[in-house]
Image 1 (tube, rainbow, N blue to C red):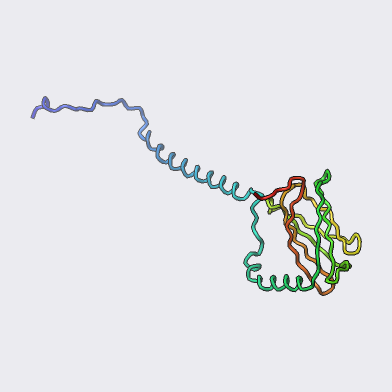
Image 2 (image 1 turned 135 degrees about the vertical axis):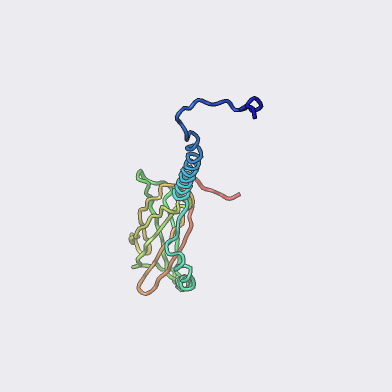
Length: 184
């Protein structure tokens, strides 16, 4: 056999000393994609938990199981025949506080005196930022408190009215502030 018939189609390349030049390419891409996934998950977690309009209800399962007792308590309070009238100041002061006034009358129309009233309120757009306070009796049947309600809009107020053995839970929604929203 002669060597004249054989030829090498690939010319020899000079030796650069880098025998693993492409070995870092794929692991770098895989690590980069995994890192990108971690960053995307962290951003999604931040966006999901930083929204002040979302709220997690504490002990939701326990409250759901006790719904019948809660409803019976509301019916018992309604059976007392107490009447309420809510008034919230249109303007907030410099600190964002508004005067909340709750007028209470018993079944005979007489002022409800000597009650203990606690209130919890939140703005519908900021449900995870509730404010709580204890009301004081300013006049017979007139209970007031100053609450931080800077934001105008729709608020939900939950009152827990107790007088002696009687308890009346009240949930009211009120439009607060200068901007009155009217559905179309």
